[in-house]
Image (cartoon, rainbow, N blue to C red; front, side, top):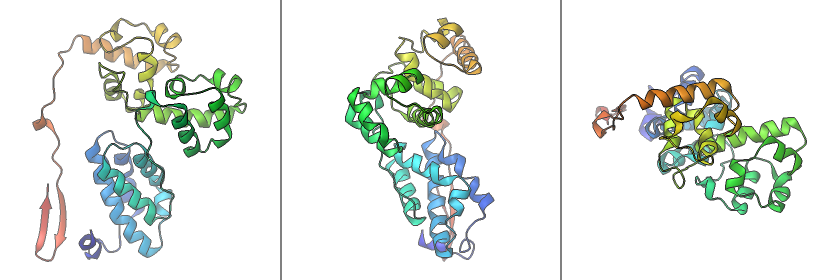
Length: 267
């Protein structure tokens, strides 16, 4: 890392436009992409800290993505790099969130509420013994009438955080057909619907038999276009052979860095 920083090619760092291209990689579902992005941002954070230009990370939208990596990434290397970046740019480092949300006890819901800034509602959630299962199935009506969240704007903020939690949750303890990853293959944000489907007894093998009305009324998938895309993909899968990806199908990544003995290539 120090050799990259001292290189004449890198000592001034990259432009905001260059760095902004790395942000989508942080939000990728591919661990390799996340790790590469975090590595380069870590290098840049050291340079920008020297130059006192750390605000650039907030301006390009990297700060929230880095915090998301710390909270949810399953890679300790990537999480560690993201933590280093946040410390170097003077941002608070969040605690990692336990990924198996369906198994959360009320005390773990309390920790999550505090982390997302909803401390005001901790007692109400605790009084109603809201655990991970209930949290993942909360409706707007329950949030307002039972848990006392009266402001519609506050509820929108809460559901934005809850949607993110649903998207990054590990459902392996209740998802034997790997429905979560299949939904993510259609669109990463569709992973948020995993628990809605599972609690209705729907898995990958049965999804092609479900109607759009059932997805809306029973599974609470309110966006019509999302319902159409999910059902279309389910019916296409029914008529397509399932192929297993082998290790040889992976993507090779090469990183070039300059040393005094000449350029080196790492795979």
